[in-house]
Length: 186
Image (cartoon, rainbow, N blue to C red; front, side, top):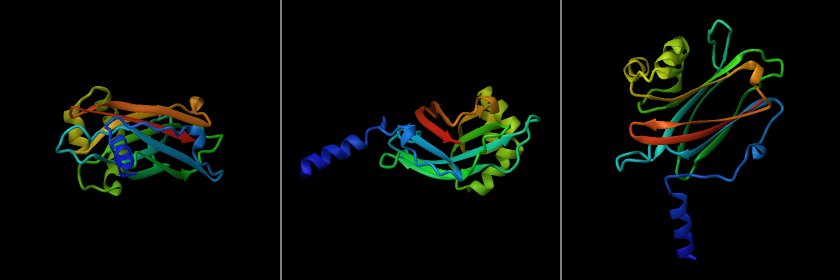
């Protein structure tokens, strides 16, 4: 029994994480929209000095045609690691007549800032952040976000927003590969 438990635990601690859950297994409320995030490769698991957990912030905004952002529809901080590689939460319901684009930011927190401190910076400077991210301008991103890492931005046009929206944010940050699948259910 002990040998089997050790094998199970060693399989759970592999750097490449997998899951058998699918969007159809996400618990959904009719009063709220749901977001699920799954890590398939953590951004803090490469180095022996790494924390082996990702302190993440996900921000979901409704973007006006002019590109202005108001308070986020969702602002959530969470920690994913080799034992807990997915999280699910609910937020303000996105109605079927919703006519704004969604803008989703995924940030890996490397400082002691709170979501209350980082969210206004993202909201007020989002155009500059988006441009710096698109141009891979790490100096400008550091100027705007400090030592916190912007892992990805995803825009979902209102005319393409479905009942279930699933996308992947992946890349390499500080020589460490990461991959997250985000599912948003209206």
